[in-house]
Each structure stands twice: as C-alpha cells, then as structure tokens.
Length: 114
Image 1 (cartoon, rainbow, N blue to C red):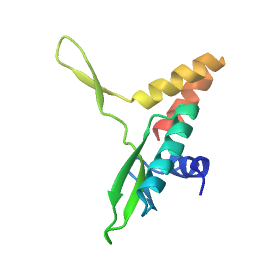
Image 2 (tube, rainbow, N blue to C red):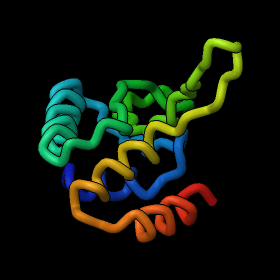
Image 3 (cartoon, rainbow, N blue to C red):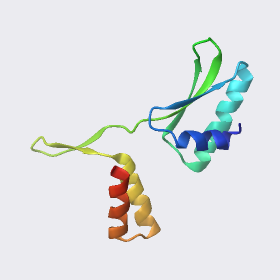
C-alpha cells in the first residue's frame, strides 16, 4: 500500500477511526510515517494524525487516524455560547473562493450538517 492510497483510505473514515499498519522494523515505520506525512503536507490535509503504537499482539504499527473536529464556541458578552463547526467554516471559505453563489453555498452546507 502506498502513502497516497493510505491517505485516501483514511480520508473516507469517520472522525476517530484509524488504520493500523503493521511495520515490525523501525526503519520501515519511520519511512512509512515520512511518506504519509509528505502526502498530507502536499495535499494540505490537517485532520489526519500519524502515530506509532503496538497492537494487541505486541506488533509495532503505524496508526493513521482521522482526527475528530475540535469543539469550538462563539461567545458573546452576555455569556451565551454557540457551537461553531470549523470544518464548515473552512468549507464555506473554499466555496466562496471558488465563486459559488450564496444560495449554492447554503444548500451544500445544509447537506454537510446532516
């Protein structure tokens, strides 16, 4: 499995899910981590993390995990906090840069919230 296919696979995962890749040799683990990291950097993907862990059998693995969205809140002076989804804000910015109309953006974001 090459680094691009690993990243493509993990991008389709739900937040919190991980792909465990057995890599008994230390050099193999380090090389795989660097290859995946380069792909993530090239594609500007920031919601995937890479770790070294041992599976339940004690075999060293490279764990590629889709990070859950951070919990953020927008607060006002009267103490009211409204949750903010940073991924939707990032998606909105990208769509505005692509020149989509406000109606198209709202339609896509309403689907993404569901």
